[in-house]
Picture (cartoon, rainbow, N blue to C red):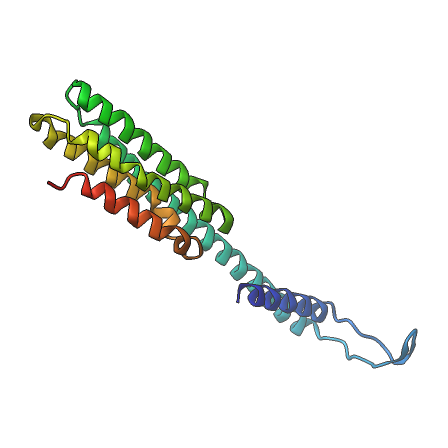
Length: 204
């Protein structure tokens, strides 16, 4: 449909330009045969044609601006959501315990790898690669869950909040990717699996 619209705009502008120029002339023989006489276009009609041509060009430019503005707005919304989620993570001060430090190191590394996988998606091939990476990360949550079980009960509530904040961060980071239907269908199942397993970390 986009290609068809572009063709219609291009053809329309070319036709308007030719009419506005008043192309044509007297009869006679051309290089390839008889030339059909085309009557000249009155100045008043030329003016109307030029106005129509300008209107089409103006509408095309406005459409392009709207699409660009929409993309930028969407990008800004995602960036704002990611920033807020990151801020929420930074505000959580986990207790300085060996068990907590070990868990945090592995979990933070996993979240970073998942974010990189989201950002790596540019086309179908990279979407498939990202989906494979996310499935791999889902498998790494089992040892992280085991490490979590060793954390003292007094620290588990705070650690659970930390996990929840990171889950929100991942959701915000994946928002732009999931908004692209052609790419989303390739990675959404892997994202859903990862998010479900992260949610299980806080279940008793």
